[in-house]
Length: 286
Image 1: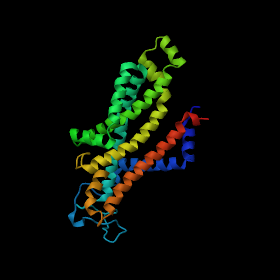
Image 2: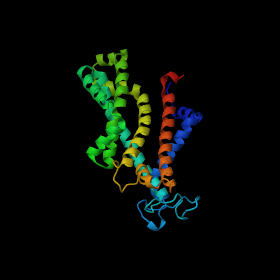
Image 3: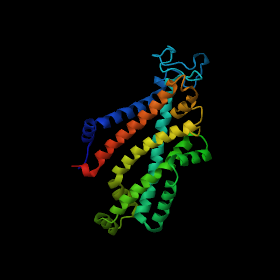
Image 4: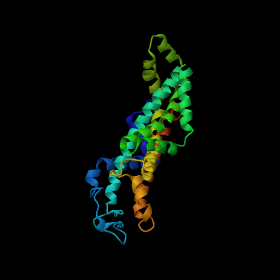
């Protein structure tokens, strides 16, 4: 059954976890879009006279800093808001890059088979031999620190899941009668793949993309925490955690807030992805 917007919204509205995930994701998106408006200070501005201040509800607070300041007197709320921009850009761009590469590779492997399938699947097997974080660290150490490199790393480390999924789906679809009929009437391989096969497997690809996005958020935070992410002059949640390690006992709020942002963002994306998986599952389409 074809699902329209009203049916989609009704299904999401009836799913408590899906709505929670949507709300969390929307909050991150709004914070990223309106960071220059919402941030009370320049995220890079230092004020050593007001360093390591607690949030306004704590004892060692500063009236001008709602969530306190870090070891250089930079406003934590402003850095969190601008950090959401890096998280959103890397998550979206990395998902798109990985998705495009993975879908193309999966289409080639599944449709043409033989030596094309063998080569692509061996590349998949080789990459799966390396732990995700270790592979990301190795590539980051080779390429260096930049926003573009982090996005590239996200794409390189996430394409295999799409490729395996698409390959498996195409193997079961390409022998169907309607595909054979299109081929018999002179339809080109590109037309068969992109106009007649891909539309039938787009739902699981969307679900995988949603879940991979949460994985990329954690990857970006991990790289930034270890100093291999974006340049140091760009505020990120992972780097905020790294910089707060020395003050975790004396000023725990400095660690709690960026850690909470990472946790809630990953939770929101995963909850939304779980709802999408159930909603787009054809077995549940009754």
